[in-house]
Length: 251
Image 1 (cartoon, rainbow, N blue to C red):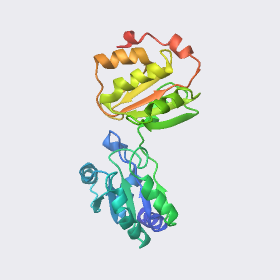
Image 2 (cartoon, rainbow, N blue to C red):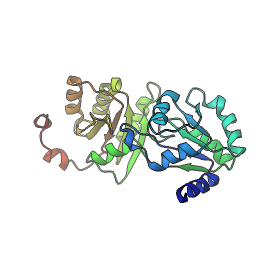
Image 3 (cartoon, helix red, strand yellow):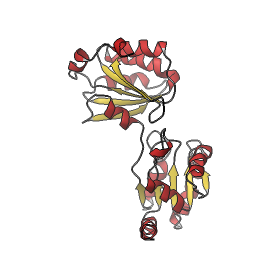
Image 4 (cartoon, one colour):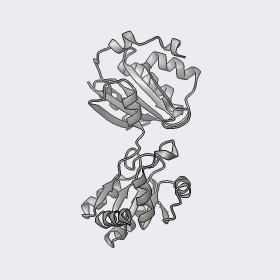
């Protein structure tokens, strides 16, 4: 009873919830996220089928509406109107935290402009586990996300290659080899980096090495699943490279 009262008081105070969902293991969702999803009036989902699996697994019966990159401009005014009327809405994406390389920014910006309260729950985000487990400096880092496919890609590489701190990329498995080749081209063969895939899943893999070694590895063993790439900054101490065991001995 106390938990319900506390939850209702939170729901009354905030109107829009950004709710992180599991990036791999279904158990990565928080108890608070489940409670909020059960208590709001509407869940906005990037893919209603994906979110449907979560709702079914945790017995969440809240109505679900579609909200994704291809319809958000069209449906945004409608959901802002519902929020202004006092409805409580939760936004979820296929995996991870809304707004991090996923839909969410436009709705949050609209809420801020309309003085609608927003609460982002803590939870899963793909790049943090890879960054922390990479062994690369993580006291300061730059999150780039997905690079442009064509226009502006070279400009971004020139910028990133000169940064003195660790930077982070998202990539799809079929573009991984191209991305590693570009890291080799712009950052050089001595730059240390880490490739993480299938995070929080059964076949999770996190490998830290140089671009040539990782190119060889993933050319022979094509990657599956979404990719996180963490690249050390320019002129970072290379003692790790010198003392790390040979990559072939670890296979």
